[in-house]
Image (cartoon, rainbow, N blue to C red; front, side, top):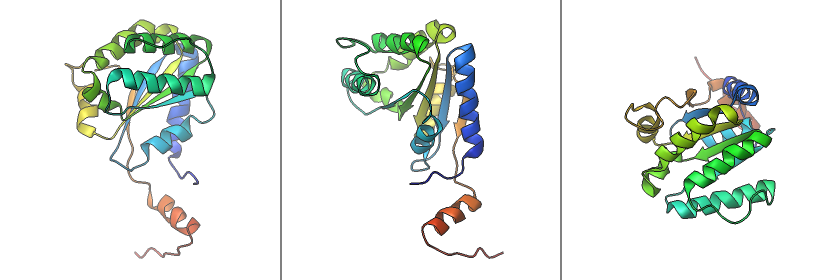
Length: 193
């Protein structure tokens, strides 16, 4: 399906990708209600760069790490051997890998880590703080639970507080884009004043 609008938001992601290549890793948070198009937008925004897409299911952390590891291998081949025993080992690998290959990493439904491993956010903080300046990764955290994403990134008592370079909230597409979608779908509507 054709991608519509989000021009300003796409430019913002492109700016972040440029910054990461020159100045080190950054974290970006994208929120918005369910079905607003966060995933499609993020994937579209990074389609011309080396990127990884990790969906965060409500599973045990070792199962999540295994699925994420499979995604790395399917995208980049055998760039590591064996398996990762902990989230910390996995994240260290990602940041070290981004030294050679600047990388965009999308963590979709990131708030679900609350249900898998309550210490995961502290692990992200530790590794991000250690590697931010000497790596080249743009971490994009997507979440549809507004309250949990706010807690993770805006609550001063949480480990990832202050780590996001920007927090974007996607809202409905403008009427012009909605009209274009309807026209492309074969519907003719006239907007009345």
